[in-house]
Image (cartoon, rainbow, N blue to C red; front, side):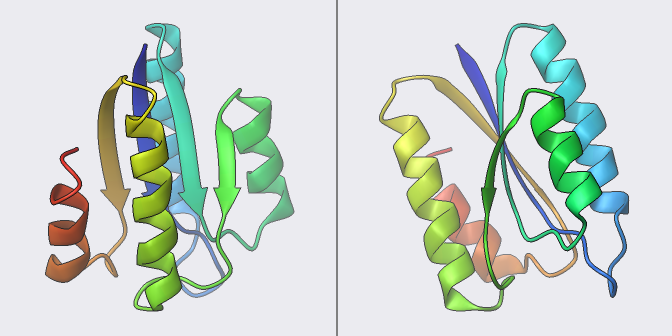
Length: 110
């Protein structure tokens, strides 16, 4: 099974555009028989419910990058998905995912 891993956030300072765009991408991925994992920090209960309603897996984080726990949780989630021997694609949607964050994600082999 092909898995799409999405890392995006939504809160009062950045809005919800990143999440809404990724939800649309996830819907298309599911229609093609894939599986979708969201790792996010999302203040909106409505958006969190929407993610699960769409059939996506949701893993919430407490604080966004540059908090070190964000990158740690993101990488551990990616590695867990990779252990299931699936084709895995990753999407990072957010201005705060700098070169260091992106490089760390690429180094996982995704």
